[in-house]
Image 1 (tube, rainbow, N blue to C red):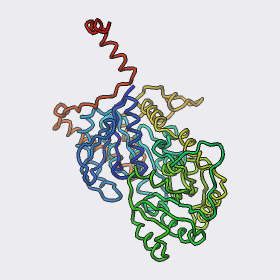
Image 2: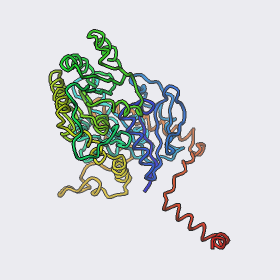
Image 3: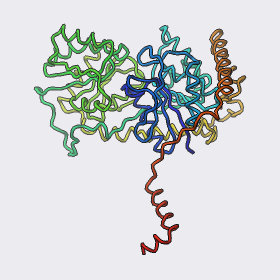
Image 4: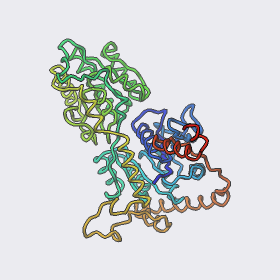
Length: 485
């Protein structure tokens, strides 16, 4: 079975990041598997309208007001007309939204359900339960996921967090991790010999690489605090820091205050294709994040042959085996101690970083991620049996197993939204009713017959298919057969 899929998120290229890379790599692999995939995101500077990327991946850059960190202004309904137009033009069957903080994602799932389309949501982040921002985000997530067909999380920790935040049935949430294209993150040279490489001498320079957005949640304050302490203890250590954000000013002030400009190289923002070139300049990758659902960048670092020092938060402990990492609490003293252990381990040649690339290559594959995501699509479309998709548990009949197969009937949708809270439930029901009325208006005044169907990008033929076509052409052409003989 092949499907027409729309990936929807505020976060996509040219902005670098884990969510952006995930959407692109997953989309290209799904196209390789025969599906039609488009991406709907907001307009970036210099990118408006329709763009085509590698492999015929079509991107719709919708002009919309961006308010914070590339997130669009939440309007609930104003995105509906153009979203409906795109979905009809591309004959979309499944809408797949990404990221809890993406307004486009939440609105697209609401509109898709109103239009009778199946929906999937992928959560890439962890959120708390106490601060005002998390409470509002969780309530919005509860609204969206009350009527979604299936949810994907990038780690088991992320799944537990999402299930609690949105009060979900755990059987409706799958764990499909991120991956990396290992061939794009190769070390400078791979040692094939069985003997360990020459250890780093006591006077050799060790370079610590940090590639991250310079925000509070990425642990930039911790990084600012530990850099002077590490450099004062290890004169032969250097730092390379790539990334931008509001904390960049604090970082520069720290360097000036401690006169460390000659030991810390600030690269500023870099493109994703430049990440590998920066990583191979180092020996240790430092990741001081305060919260992380997965952490693709540490897999990329290990693939480049770097020893990883990271905080034990979120889903990070699930990502790499212990021999590739040194963990620390998200505290200044513990992070300094962990970095010191990593430096000592490299100098004593206790870790074989030259083997990391081959090990990572066997652990993570976007092809595997695409296959598992495809199975989710098959499950929500009814192309595999519910007990095969969700799992069968003795004594739990599928008639009474909960509302896992989402009905499109308005009354059933309102029942699900009404349970979201005393006041929020009524507000959510009102939003759904208004959304349905807007859809009826659009269907009456802008009928589907007036929307041109977009031509699909021609699919590449596999070698076996080419041979079959070539053989058919030869059989059907007697003159060609005669000339060949």
